[in-house]
Structures are given as C-alpha cells and as structure tokens.
Length: 274
Image 1 (cartoon, rainbow, N blue to C red):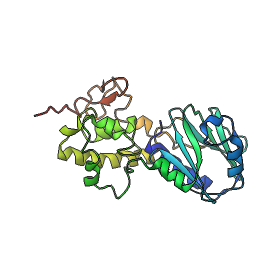
Image 2: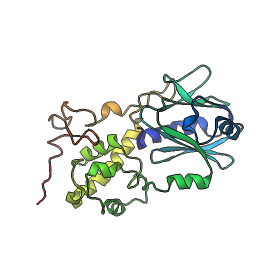
Image 3: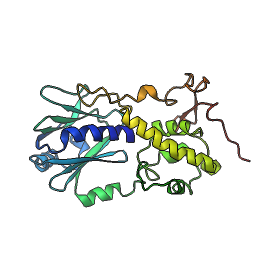
Image 4: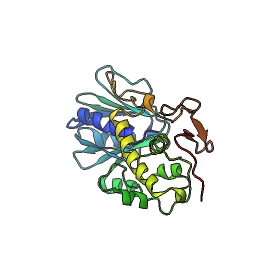
C-alpha cells in the first residue's frame, strides 16, 4: 500500500491543485468505502471549499472550510487521479469529487476508506498512530525509545504503525539497506551505532523517495512525470536475484511469505549474538 513518500508526494501535488477550490458535487460508485451514505457524503461536501491538504503517516487529510475532514487511507492497488475536462484515470474510480477547476478520482480501491469526520473523530481515528518519522520532534533518543520494548525483527517494528507511522514493507527494506542493518535482525541485538545509522537512513530514504515521487504506478495527472520515479531507483525491495548496485552481490529474500524482506548479504551481513 502507499507509504509515507507516496502520500507526501500526493500532499504536495494536490495542495497545488485543490487548496482554495470549491467542491461542486460528488459521485460515489461504491459506497462501502465511506462511513456515511452516498447522499450524506454529497450533501456534506457540495459547496464546501478545501482549505489545505495534510498527511498523517499513510493517511491523507483534506481540510474543509466548515471544520470537517476527509480522511483517506489507500491500500494496495489504489491511487488518486486529478483530471480536467474529459481526463480520467486508467483504473476504475470508486469515488469522484468534482471541483470548480477539476475532479479528484479515488481509483483502484479494493480496501481502504474515505471517511467524512469531525475534528474530534479524526483525532480518535489517528490516536493510536506512532510519531511521524519526519517529525522534527522525533530525536534520535526518542526514536530508539520507541523500540525498547520490542523483541521481534526490525522490519516488523518499523512497519508497525503504532510504533512509528508511515513506513511499510517497501521502505523498511530500503532503510535497513541504507543503514547496513539486516531487516530480520532481532531488535535486542541492534547496537548503538546501528540505531544512529537507522535514524539517519530513515530521513534520507524517505525524503529522497518523496522528492522523486515515491513508487506509485499511476500518475496523478495526465502530465505528471514525477509520481513513481523512485521505484526504478530502489536498492533492494523486490530485486531478488539481481546484483546489488553497491557491491555486486546477489540480492536475497529472507523471512516468510507473510513478512519477507530483501537484503544484500554482503552490505547487510548477519550479526550473531555474542
């Protein structure tokens, strides 16, 4: 599913297109993704203005001029498309929000949701999320403290949204590689210098991926050349059997099907318990 870089890319691009625009109507083709009826959704949104777009972890938030929020969580296969005139997304849309200047399509949804919420309801939904990886208040010390009580593998903890929000399977592997730490290492075995590398790698990888458009397959607009640009530059994720760009070793898959990880055995050597 889209992770922090993909949603941050959406936030930046949509802010340019949606902020200050007025909603003229909606179309709901599959009501199951809403928390209200299609009629209630349309009535609540029509003639409302979008003030700004926010990201919280893997969630996208549209702030409306009446204090309400549209909270969207996209799962695997889902994407957003902003079109004008006859422009339409490649995938079938489940929800369409029409605005004065264009239309926002939520397409390819099989899971996930788009919920209309009050400020209090939004806070309740997001209350269990861990801190954002790019929050300036998340110091190295606080970052390490998030994992103190964990005993499992690093990747599982990095992808646990209640520990830290926004990182999933893709970027957990990329961060671990950049830090020269195995994603399957047990957390109690991680040494102090490795935590420093993980903290720094997290910032570098996530910021770089967001700046390059993340790894989404579908462009946001017809002329969008940015979205998805990071996918071809990934270092290990879904590159099993290929040569590592750093050392030339063959990238391997470790773990189980439920929690597999991609590693370079040379750049990320196993650490044995002493």
